[in-house]
Image (tube, rainbow, N blue to C red; front, side):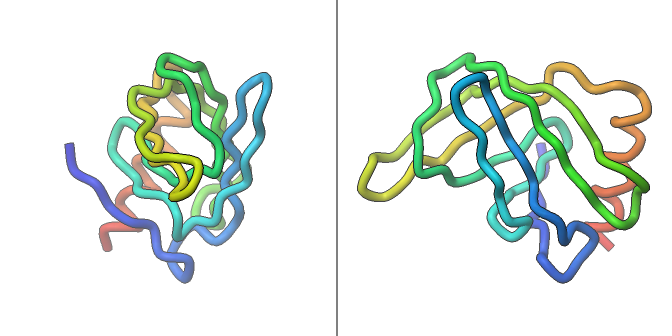
Length: 109
């Protein structure tokens, strides 16, 4: 699995929203490590393993927002240093996957 850091001046310059039933985070694009099948990010709050999450990405390269679901597969850290969260996508429509592929290609360019 390859990872790419999204530059704030690159293809994604809007906030990224990650939410569960109890928590909603707005993340800057520069704080996300993008993988082909998921993301990693820092959070001030911990997430339980296997927590289902909804992710919304907005990019000028793809019209509209990209909505997908995922599950937390790793949460390390502490309340003093913050938490490193790894999430893998579990439900991505064909259209959203196409947009994610376009976004990944523009990040690698």
